[in-house]
Image (cartoon, rainbow, N blue to C red; front, side, top):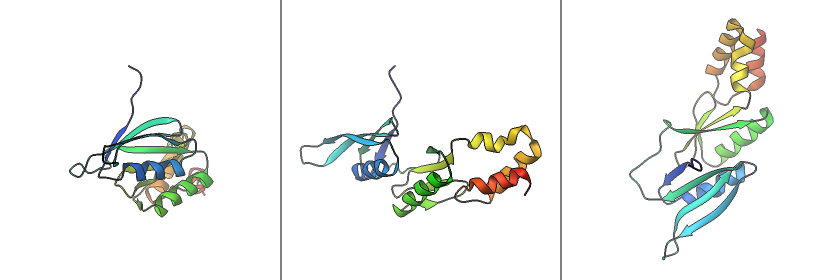
Length: 153
């Protein structure tokens, strides 16, 4: 086995979605666009931060749900804000706790790379509970607010 590649089914917007994703996520590229004889796009191969993906235009009948999502681990609040705002500008609908659904119905989580570490709060159960309580009030994650909750501020 060589690798596992997420394969996303779209209703005619695979190339548009891949182009959008690669414009928002650094280290990304559209690598190949497979066309049908009529010139329409059938499959798009692309990379998001080096991770290969494939997208296919296959028509309606299989809508996306948040049962499967893609988690974007970012370095800091500035990057989190930039990615979150770009997705919203692209037509996404925010949910809660760092989740959003993009314009094509694909679910994403925009989280700091050290999110698990933050929520564990150094092994302090009371600080961890405060961190989770703070997170549950958020739509877009706010790292400084979670850090303040951990400290008990």
